[in-house]
Length: 255
Image (tube, rainbow, N blue to C red):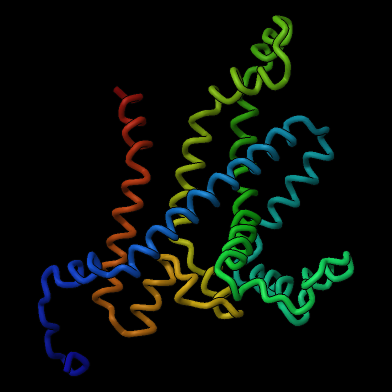
């Protein structure tokens, strides 16, 4: 009837009540939070290591690495996913071919997307690969602002490289690390394209849904736009909760 102009019935908070009592939703929520935290931590760790490496390289080597990072970062998501899906394809994939040549038993014809654990390992690798360039370049920009005079003074006082990194560099670039970590948590919490394309390539949807794909499944798949909208509001609440600490710290600094 609504297709012909009839007003939609007002359901109040019924969609939210249904969500609270839906155990599958909380499974998806926990899965999404764990996935985004693990992926964000790995991304920031690898990106930070690459930033330190760039800071230590010679000019030409640093430029080559930065160009490579920018190319990976600028690649369209669908184009990158086409390559990654071919790599992990269980019939003609490069990964299985390489493992077979290395003598790994059971690698031939193994479907990496069929099991939830290996599915999320593949998804994490892809998302980290796509996110590391932004993190590395952002942290490297912060490293360039660290005074060399302070580092030289610490070296003269006997501090080794690890001590300078831990007690001088990391505290000075802490604001950069915090905002990069916050952005990664938000982006990885609402990840959709990579998960959806991997599901289409062979993943079991109900066992690999994250919040983004769950909203898509409810709205576009089942036509339940009311519940899908309620889940979207839940994602907004989770995003606010994740960013609350950083916003609070910013307000303290302004005061």
